Length: 248
Image 1 (cartoon, rainbow, N blue to C red):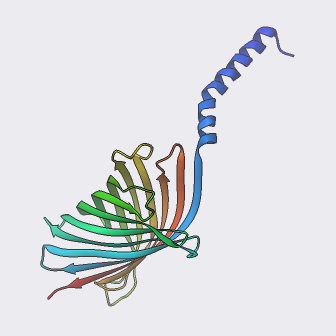
Image 2 (cartoon, rainbow, N blue to C red; image 1 turned 90 degrees about the vertical axis):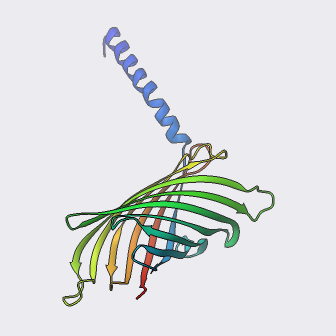
Image 3 (cartoon, rainbow, N blue to C red; image 1 turned 90 degrees about the horizontal axis):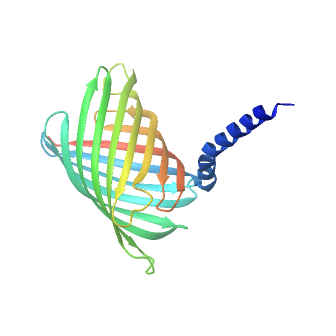
């Protein structure tokens, strides 16, 4: 048994604690999070036109739920200019398609401008990418209207060489890739998802030759939906094949 004054103090303290905790509990109860798994395959091609100019293109297909359902396709190309050995700029455009129940439901045309910076820290290679995109969506459902959205992306990637894959060929390397990318939206239709996504990347990269490499990354993607307290978490297996063509 406690004394009346002590009991009142404990009651007030517990009431104050639950008062502070209640907004967090309410937020946790109201927040809706859906989970899925995705499988991305992407082919990247670089064509070196001159010491400073190159064309960087990529195309890919994306599935979900263990390759059971189609998710997206993409085709993208950029013209890049190397200002220095460390800094580059590029402009380009892309076509995306999104599927719903294995049926193409939306097209997206995208233009982009990009600034890149790569530097060495000992054996580590650090790359920074700032990309600005103008995204225009064209739903194939006539009841939905077109929309225009700006997106701002910043990505930092670290490449850590672990071991050589050949005693004779120094270009053959196994590296560990670590990275993070944050994405923000802007536009008149953006209400709840100004902060759009965060992508955490980790996995090995196999440099098979000077012109060919393969990466196998795990991408943990957190997405904010343009609805109140609605989010997606995605576990993504991302296979990337990079091919460089050098003009002689």
